[in-house]
Every structure is written in C-alpha cells, then in structure tokens.
Image (cartoon, rainbow, N blue to C red; front, side, top):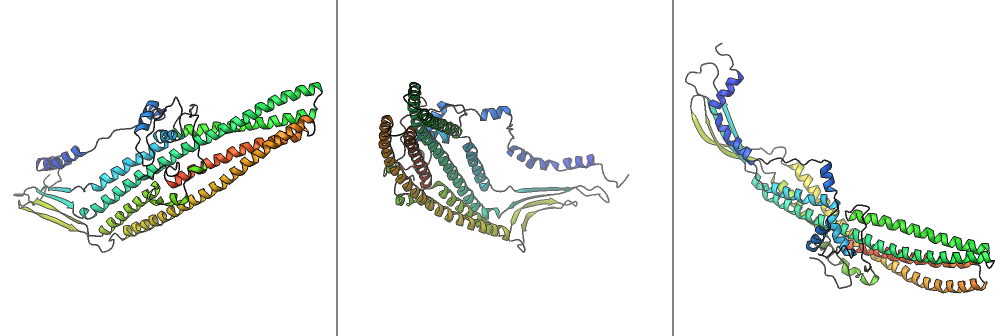
Length: 476
C-alpha cells in the first residue's frame, strides 16, 4: 500500500546501504581501544594460595633488598633465630594485612592516570530516509558532527596535581602502617624475652621449693618437723607452681600473636635469638631531640600534609570548573534536496543557576577539615611524646626502687632461713618472706617489660629508630 511505513528490516537495510558504513569507523576504533576483561575468581584454590605460609628463601632475599623510609635492609638467618629488628623487617614483608594496604597504590596510580586522560570527542551521525509523500528528486539526508569539551583543559592541570599529591599521600600512609606493624613485631619479641626471663625465675624457684618440700616431707616422717611446716612448704610450692603455669600461658599467647603479625600459621615455632639486646634507659633520647622536626619526620603527618595539598588542588579544580562548559567541533550535513553544508558547532552552558557552587563549598569544607586534622595530629604527637617520656621516667624510678627492695629482701630471706633452721622463726614466716622476694623479682621483670613497651611507643611517636643517643640520624 502506497505511503505505508516500511518494515523495520527494510529500514535498517536502507541505513546501511545509504551511508551506515560511516558508523563503522568510530565503532571499529572503539573496539580496538577497549580493555579486555580477565576474571579473577574468589574460589577455594585462590584462597588457599593466598593463605600459604611465606617462603623463607623469598623472605631472606626481600629482607636484604627492602626499601623503606625508616626500615633498613637486614640479613635474616632463620637457623640462628630472629632478632627484634629482623622480626620487624620480616613482618613488613609477610604480614597479610599489609597486602590490602599496598593495593591502594594501584588505585592511586589508576586515579592519577585517569586525571591525565583527556575526554573523548563526541561523534554524531544522523540519517533521514524519505519514506513517504512527494519523494521524487529527493535523496537521503544525513548529518555528521564531531564535538570536544574544550573546558576540560581548564581543570586538567589541577586534577593531575591533586591525583599526584594523593598518590604520594597514599605511599606515605602505607609506609606509616608498615612502620607500625614492624614496631608491633618488635614489641612482641621484647615481651617474649621478658616472659622467658620470668619463666626462668619461676621454674628455678619451683625447683628449689620442690626440693625443699621433699626434704621437709622426710623430716616430718622422722619427726624432726611438724605438719604446719609441711603445709607452709606445700602452699609456697603451689603458689610458685601457679605462677609458672600463668607465665607459660602468657608466653604461648604472645607467640601466637607474633606468628600472626609475621603471617605464619599458629603452630609454627618461631625461633628467636638468644642474645637479643633489650631497651634500657640509656637508649632514650631527650624530649628536645624527639620534638625537633617531628612533623617533617612522622610519615603519617607528611601523608596528611600531602593529602592537604591534594585537596588544595581539588578546590582549585572546582573553582576553575565554574567556567561555562564549551564544546566545539566540525559538522557536515546534506538535506533531502541534496544541498550539502559544512561548518562547525559551538555549544556553551549558561551559568545561571549551578556555577559549581555546591562542589566548591564541599571542597572548601574538606580543606578546612584536613587543615584542622593536621594541626590536631601534630598537637597529639607532641603530647604523646611528652606523656610517654614522663611515664618512662616514672617506671625507671620504680625499677630502681624494686632493685633496692630485692637486695633487702634477699638479706631478709637469708636471715629468716637461718632463723628457721635454728627454730627461732616458724616456717610460715620464712615462706612469706621467700614469697615476697619471688613476687618482687617478677614485678621487676614486668616493670622492665613495661619500659620496653614505652620504648616501642616512643619509637612510633618519634617516627624513627631511637638506638643509642646520637647513634641514629633522622631519616630524610
């Protein structure tokens, strides 16, 4: 029937026949530039591979070649055992939680890449096929245009600066988290050393009291001592026995924690060196040395500063984005009367309402938040350093007092023992004095462990290794 619409198949055929081939050019260019998809299934095999224990040979090689702002390359000998510093470096290499943190580098690098990519031009093609009415002498009309957003050049520089500063901030933030994990491993090593010392003291005391208990049991059987003497000896032995079990439980928990930080399975027997140097009061630098250049040394503060610079660039880009959006490009068309025209198109947005006011306000508020956060973090860092050093001085005084008390208790125990043998002092009084000495010895070791914990906290706060005074230089 004349004048009725053409079937869809016939219409598509006319499009391809009368100029649709022009569309193949941008379509083929699009296919050529597309990235391919590679699946990464989260299945049992992938999870098992990710949970594998670290390879010791690989750890040894990476420890020699580690590149970090604070941590230094080190030689690891698993047969000899790990030192505190070696455990710190190994934790940075093998700790599972740091893998996800390091993946942020890839995201930041991709964001920097995206910031530098110019937007694609827009290609438009139209085809009008006469299908009814007086079509004699007419031809198919078509139109071609190519537009590109010119204003993208205005904000591109600021966006690249923001992405570059953000990538630097991410790198520094990851390095700061690595430093914290390293110090956590170091702290666990120190704790295990002190717990081993406590266990040694407890076991030695247990051995002495067991021998003493056996001797008293024989003496009671011979009638040389009373049941009260035996009960006092038994009670003293059980108290020390309970201490041995408690310290042993704490030691096992710290071993599990160390294996977790090192990315090792719970049942793994992590060997430590026998001659690990422990922190002492002489290794602590004065407060002035820690405070000097703190905000230029602490990686988290530098990362926050780089984040602030990134936000400055984001605000600059938002302000520049107020400029009206402009698109320009060539155009070519033909009407149904076979008149061909060539020219260009220009479109400009009219900034009557938006003017990017909302984005500018958001970026300004974010910048102010980062500024105040940086000031607060610097204040907190300085306050933490002062607080830690004050606590360390207090613990040092307690250690000095405990050492003097132990010496007095040793003399008292010797006097009580002689009095007990001579029958001038009852067994209960003697074992009470002995228990005081044993408890004070454990308290002294716990105080020294507290001092090592403060030492680690001070290293984290200072953002560098402390070492002996004047031994270590601040990292650049």
